[in-house]
Length: 229
Ligand SMILES: [Zn+2]
Ligand SMILES: [Zn+2]
Image 1 (cartoon, protein in one colour):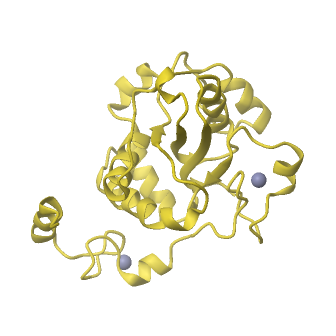
Image 2 (tube, rainbow, N blue to C red):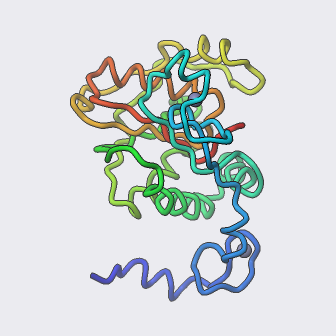
C-alpha cells in the first residue's frame, strides 16, 4: 500500500542530505554521509561497548547487566553527537526523524528476539516541563513508525529527581538513579526494549530495566542511539 504521508513528504521536501546538504535522491542522507557514520560494530552484545569482537566483554561476563541485550548502532562521535546535541538542547526535531529512521534501518542487524513494546527512558516531570519534550520519545516515534513497533511512553515514570550525570563515574551514576523509576504493571509478560538517546555506563537503563523486571516484564533490552566508548 502507498504510504500517503511519506509520498506527500517526498513531494514537499527538497531532496537534500540532512547532514551535508548535498543534493540526493534519498530523503535523509547521501551515500557518502551514510557510509561515514560512526557505526558501533563490533560491540558487546550485553552492554553495546565498542570493541574488536562481538562476544560479551569481560565486565559483562564477570557482572552481567540487568538487561538481556544492549543495542546502540552508533558510537557517540561526529556527526551523530552533533545531531543528538541539536535534538537535546536546541529543540531541533529534524534530526529526530533522521536518527529515528536510521535506528529503524539498522534494527534488523541487531540480532536477538522481537520485542513487544518500546519504552522511552522518562524524564522527571520538572525537567520535562522545562525542556518541553523528551528527546527519547522524539526518537522512539519515527523508529516505531518505520519499524511498526509499539511505543508506550507513559509506562515508565521518574519518581524522583536525579542529578545530572555528566562527570560522574559508574558507581556514582548507579547510586544516583537507584529507585528513581516506577513502571506500569502493563509490562507483565512482555518483551520490553528501553530506549535512550545516549548510553554511557548503562546505569540509567540498568535501573529502569530492574524496575521493568520487578513489574513483571518477560525480558528487557537496552536500546540507545549512541554508545559512549
Ligand atoms: Zn551528505
Ligand atoms: Zn559488555
